[in-house]
Image (cartoon, rainbow, N blue to C red; front, side, top):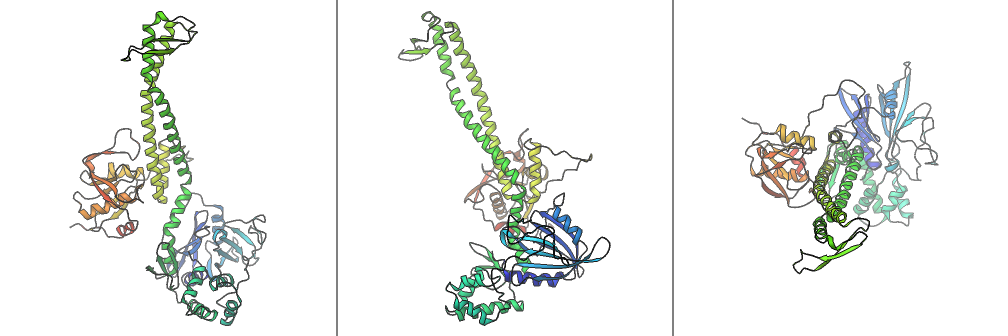
Length: 575
């Protein structure tokens, strides 16, 4: 993913154009690496995302919605104290590096004008967001603290002077003349692409390889000419934001020869970056917030697997219950052959068609009658154990199915679904119930299944967790609506808001059922469908569990791109 110096240049230009002179109204911190600034400028509100994520570090305007924690983190509180109400004087890129500087003007507690600088360093796992007192040049705080033990070059802690990241002896290609670049390439004994990356600020391998590909000949002069053409575009702000959809998705703000195949174009660089990272970053936020739940569910799943294995071993022993009854009856019939102190006795097996002899072990400390009764007691115990074990094994298997369902739901969950899954686990006793400080209980929110639209506009609803599944099937649905679910595979409940859907709508709903199931990566997935009136939830059943009949089955192969197509379609207008 090429968030390089050239993309940073394009982002800086856009932000300067739209945010300069703007006022910071609100600041939020949805996760430990992301910030949201609400900025008002020219009678418009802008939402700015700043991320220091080790994989998805970036900076851009966003239209996405973010869920904020109930208690803001400390860094967010510091930013609110120093920056809310401040004006953005300018936004600049440092050299051609992935560093953007916000110059801010505001007032302190006693009304004096103060100037701050916010540094956004996009450097992979070393990415950071740092607030600096512009006049004193010392750090007020940062989203990531770097101690002297972590870095000998610079310390990023409150009170320390700010130092730029090490320059790595690179030159800025936007200020260097053509002859300088030509000299660098001519004197290097390394491949041209490698030399460009190692010698010039902000040049990514993606751009370097494309420059070499575009060169007319494999010479330093031709590569230099190819690079200068790209740099002239950057200097003029001639950008073409686009996402290249291939085996590996990538993006850039320049037309690249290496981008062949499906290209998606955008009006702004922020729109491109927002689109590119939206799903990836969202999944990462869900993963962060649901990490404890995922561990809990997988531990419970494994515990039940071990439990079944142990119970099956005990059941195998219990299957021998009939032989203990046989020993007791044979011993009773031959008591005259046994005396106390015997260790075993050999008797005729009346149950054997050949009347063969059988040897029965005895407890020498017991009388013959007590030995017989001991075998009868063992028989009764194993017989009862066998019945109970089968119930316990069935119960453990139901638990395994339940946890598999929840694990699948976590894999496709949105941020807003996580708390509903967490509440369900509290209600089922797998998580401790939170104690609320306030006396007034918060009114539980009504579950909101996700809505899609079929090609003909028919609404299709998908339950993203068990609370939504139960609400969708037992409360929201009408008796003649069509209900779908993957056959014998953990997945979401899907509802078509129509009594007689078209075959196309039915196929599209089956696609959604397969996509929101454990079989989302499989082919030819069986999906059952029936009317809602044939779907029943047994008394005492786990959340999301139902039984159904009079179903028919469709087979579909899930296609992930299908989701966006169905979301964007308008709802049908009934006459």
